[in-house]
Length: 468
Image (tube, rainbow, N blue to C red; front, top):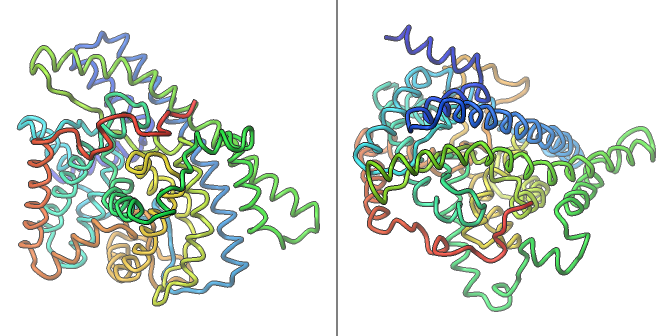
């Protein structure tokens, strides 16, 4: 059995997400009754779109990493917990004993919840099952019990499906993504925080009147409010902060600053175009899913669960995220008791923030506030969990960076679900996991009584038009 699981894991690792996703989509589409030719074209289109999305995100990653390194160097920050980035966290998760089991385990959870009508999401984002394995690996590092780790991973998979269902209507309305949901545990945890932030802001005179959605920005600033130019301006500002003292004189500084500006302008322009290609491939699949369910379960919807990468190209998501980059570095300096230095994972901030847009009606100001609150809490979560994170990394064979005493990442290391799982398991053992399972079950039950999700889902939020 272990050899079979190892082979499945090796196949996914070798082919990669951009190859496996079209294969899974093709199989899914044929099962739903789509003609093989149409299903094949749709699957290839989706694969190509994700290649394009990953290329643009790679540009964003490289640009922000270089800027972040420069800003950190300029500030002289020194901390003993180093941010090693989500690829390292994913490698730790899949390299753990839980990682070997997580793909069949999460698929089984999804199938059971679909068959019992407790979820409306078919999660085809198999690569991001690493989030479930990561939580499980922390539990194993804490307790030494693989069964506890597997239970934790299974509950995490159910939690992701609950978040996907709960947010689906709002995500579809705001981002113009029919038939899509987001079972991504890097993006979903900010949603409750954003709801609380929004509730508080609505009760503060003056602050509640600040409207900075992308349509308002464009109306007020004309061409300078367009996503392309907005990306350029934010990039130039970040470039100046990071590279004002780069070696090589004025022209070296100018080259770095302009390069950063143009790169982020490219991200703002190209990401929405890649998402449009993705939707071209997803529409036939969504139609087949709808027809399939109408024949067998009238009125029931099935959403396709995808990576939140399809959200971050919206101007509100990317603009608020880019503003949060220097703020995050500032927070790492001024927060008392923080031991984390940000490094590799600053480019993950768009993924963390993207799901706030439907809740906060695309208001960039409120999205930034929600991001600040989330990151501030995250620094203390990461500081608290760093020893366990590091222990799980060593157990999975991960080599610590030179000079790092302990490690973390913004993706998962900063977020409350892993912290909740670890704390309750550490205090109550398997009873803690059962409590989380009960909470997830209660959430699923309440959602199925009110399937609209949060109140914003009732209609298209202001400023919610998808980027062209």
